[in-house]
Length: 116
View 1 (cartoon, rainbow, N blue to C red):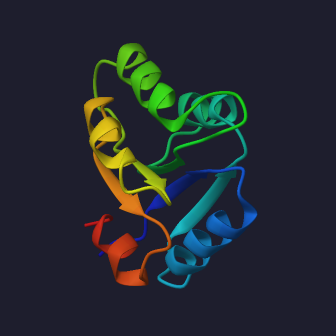
View 2 (view 1 turned 45 degrees about the vertical axis):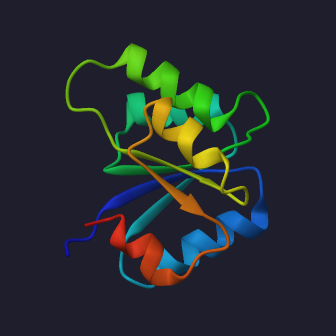
């Protein structure tokens, strides 16, 4: 698997560090965003290969971010994975345009499988 640039949008230091550690140990470059707007700005200006977005962010939900990104981008959409402690969020995340869902806490292999 090639090394990829991953954006993690989360205001939860514990969940963010957990994902960062799992992905960085496998050689992936990690970029952190603390809000939905910061995540969208980074995607627009710098690009990444994949986004992990927490379901709840300070300025908008991860689901709102998925909808806004889908509406704003037409070609070459970056996959967005919504992550949450609540399994019930999965159906809503996928309906909002998320490429996948990750239940937290997760095993390293669960997160790494989403990069393939």
